[in-house]
Image 1 (cartoon, rainbow, N blue to C red):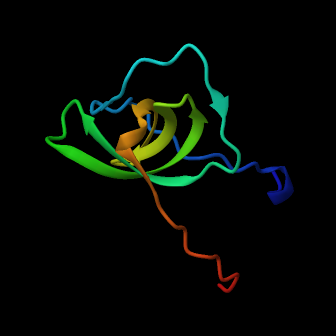
Image 2: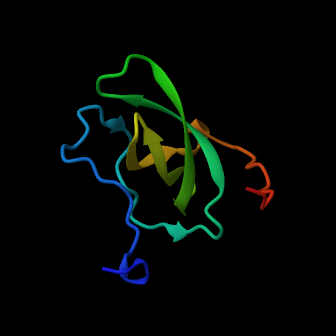
Image 3: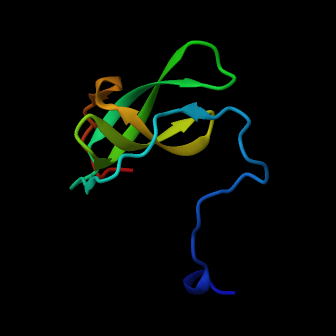
Length: 98
């Protein structure tokens, strides 16, 4: 296989994470969000004590709840969560230098 034939894919963990985020039920209707805004999500997990603050991105909006992608202990999670648990965060501009 040559370099041009190799397709990158994200690493995958053989076992699902034991620690799952606690979200809310999915709403009947929602709309996609343009640009996937960067956010911090305050969320509780099944095993980690207390509320955690995780970086994430908003994917869908349903008014009082949003669908977010977040990362916790190296695992990507997708959950619906009340809007008041989400705050915007600023991404640093990419300098382009290596």
